[in-house]
Image (tube, rainbow, N blue to C red; front, side, top):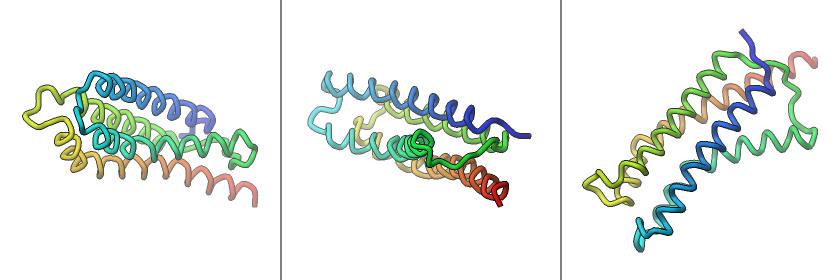
Length: 147
C-alpha cells in the first residue's frame, strides 16, 4: 500500500518541527529561569545533537525539492511512513520526558540528560534508519521508473 510522498514529507516535517519547537521553548524557558545553573552549555550540548541531525535531514530534503533538485517520488510505502512517524513521535515524547521529569529525578538535570543518552542514542538510530528507509526506498523506486 502506498501513500503520497508529498503528504509523507509534510507530515513528518510538521511532526518534527512542532515537537522540536515545543521542546526548544521548554529548554529556553528553563535556561532563562536558571534550571541548568552554570551547566547551560552542557544542557544545550545534550539537546542540540538529540534533535538537529533529523531536522537537518528534513530541511535538506525540503530544500532540494524547493530548488527543483529533489528526487521526483510519487509514492512511498505506507508501512515505512507509519513506522517513521510512530518512531519519531515516540522519540520526541521520550526527549520531552527527559526534560519534564528532571524535577522528580534524584539526579541533576545535566546528569539525567547525560544518562538519557543510554536510551536516546539507540532510539535515535532507529528513527534515523526508518526515515532513511522512506527516503532511500522512494528514491530507488523513482530511479527505476526513470530507466
